[in-house]
Amino acid sequence: MKYGIALFPSKKLQDLVNSYRKRYDPNYALVPPHLTIKNAFEASEEEMKTISQELRHIAQEANPLKISIKKVSSFSPVNNVIYLKVEPTDELIDLHNKLHTGGLESKPEYSFVPHITLAQQLSDDEHSDVLHRLKMTDVSHEETIDRFHLLYQLENGSWTVYETFLLGKDCK
Image 1: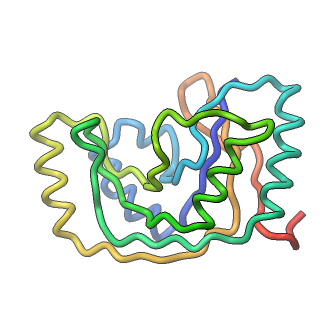
Image 2: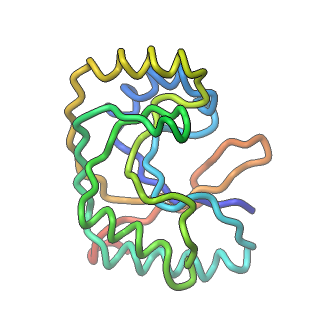
Image 3: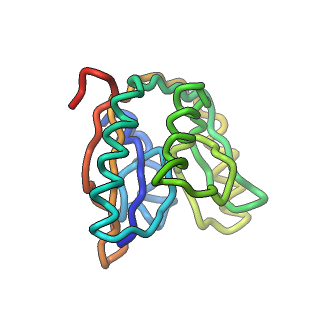
């Protein structure tokens, strides 16, 4: 089965992101707005028991994360993805790194660029137009996220929560 690990922002931020994703993201119905901290990976049911234990340990050793968003950006010309740029903090980078070591060891396909997707799979012209428009909007948002989620992919391509892990030593 295919799994991934993500942070879900507040409902307020998800509503803002979805106002764009409805129009500009063909994956809108497949997964809520999120910040991916470990891309999709394959694992068996048996492997998931060990992985869940490791994730629990990682979560207990981490603290809730403060995220800050100050601008809209794009991965163009690599691909036509427009996103809210999440400022990379030491805590966020550390969590990402820990989720790629030990039993979860893997080499990410791309460098870690914390973001929340607004639009993807746009034509070049549409990408240019939408990006220009979104860059003119004032984006300033901060919040604290106190959990990460292990997701799994269903047969129809949508993602759903498999398990949630609270961040911090006091969380079990």
